[in-house]
Image (tube, rainbow, N blue to C red):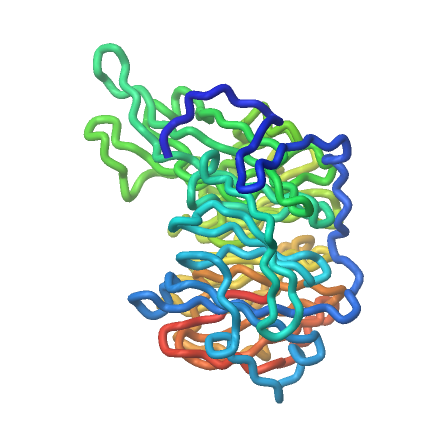
Length: 444
């Protein structure tokens, strides 16, 4: 995406198929969605499966969905075959889906392809009956055709998409290296009315000393609204340019973990905050990576720090890292090189993570995490397999005190599992029928 040269406004005209106009609402800062909502009566559970394109488990052949009742999702005598019976959702590669709290709506932004960057919704009607919205809006001209995005926990009102253009090297007048930067976009979507609410574009510099060494933000992802509803915390994926050769360095001494904080709902005033506890990225990959807990603090996972593994970081209500909070997943689980692929806060200080670690050859596991005690343990009662890979996992459902998760090895059948968040008890639910090379990437 080329750097924009037009004047940018927080609210203005947006060109879509329906020539919609953006709107700024005076109540955008009301964070209304409870941390662990009450169970929803007659909630749909939608399973999503990613199709192989060229290599087993690559998930790049598109995404299909199928929905069942909570009763059927819990029933081990029920079989679900999303690949034969499901409905495709619009996406050239793996769709990046979100769902409403009540499970009745899926939200999707098409990832890559001719329709990349197009937002639409699907009404969930059971089985393979999904009604695609007639109204759509494209954010491609602002955030590119492959934006990263998440739904805010604000009562299904808002989604936030983020993007960074390909970073470019800027030189001093004497041709020596100065810094590497891309142009960042932060854009908010009205999920109920299918329109763009606001967007901002800017460069996000690091400190002069960090930039002189070649460090830069390569990607933004996993925006999270703080408890006060006045700031977004956005995760970062860091890279480093060699100042002499101009090439990306595959191995480098990492900085402390970083996030970008912007004002909400204006999306202005980007500020970089840095943790001194961990050094991994905070962007996650295909799912939420930060959550506001019952105590009002934000808890955030880290990735891509092979030397120290994943950490859970704490960001206080002052929107700064609490460097006195040290929670190493390696230490808690007694492993080396832990890597959180995805995780979900489930309420009252308890979270669940899907992860792998050194020596596991990429095999995935599920951990129960206590954020208050800073402990973690492997979840028993789940059938683990060497082909279990959570690398593209996206969706957990938290419905009252129950957490739903899809567990399928690549190319093998698996199950939905239902976990009692209070007791940790695990129940094996509906069977998930697989196809060679495919895998299920979440429940919504």
